[in-house]
Image 1 (tube, rainbow, N blue to C red):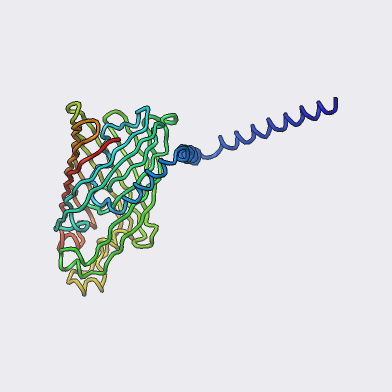
Image 2: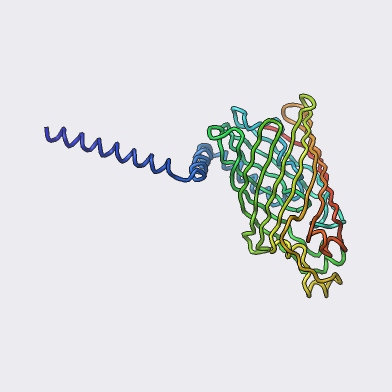
Length: 322
């Protein structure tokens, strides 16, 4: 009898403990629960880790993938099974943000979507920036079919004496920067919108950039898809001063006037991306973009005297879906 009572008390204690544990998990912040679910899905298959490492390794070279982070290449987030694509092409873009000199650069990009709707994406940032971005959507379809949210990592290329403009090349070199942040977006039917921010974590420019973009996608045929996009970006004082300011030393070296740049909206842009699928595996992507520098970025001697407020980009690339 005593043994039976003790056993029942022990079972009740175990049930109470389990209820408390589940309650504690449920009361965790929603973004921590999302991230924990994402990690569990990643750890289920070793090849998921390999794919993420491969995309991370490519991020440092993704300097000109204009709007290619938005190309679906027939791998919708609503697909029931996992799949993805990789792309490699050639981009033609300014040799620094605000330059009037252009150069050809590699343009790698890619995306992998898990059956849950979560994805990892490699692409570029918007405007005339020279930066690659790796982003992770940690929201599954069980949570939302239209909302996306997750962390991002950016690698911003350096500006050194290799630029073609003789005045800017004599200015102090700006080393490459690593930036981290978050993004949130919606993707409903042909319409999409995203808000993101990235802050320097490498102590190079110590600034923050906030990005806002929207897009509309239309299928002209079973093989041809076109996407139109608009974008704008706001930058902090530290970012603006690093990339658009001219201090006394740089003025003496370059001959450009001294200039102090403050925070504000630094650009607006338009772009169009076309994706043609030859078959289920191979495709061709082309993108054209125009960016207009604004406010203190436009008025900076780095742009106004040595560069151009009108910025253009073009990319042609081959994609492979799997």
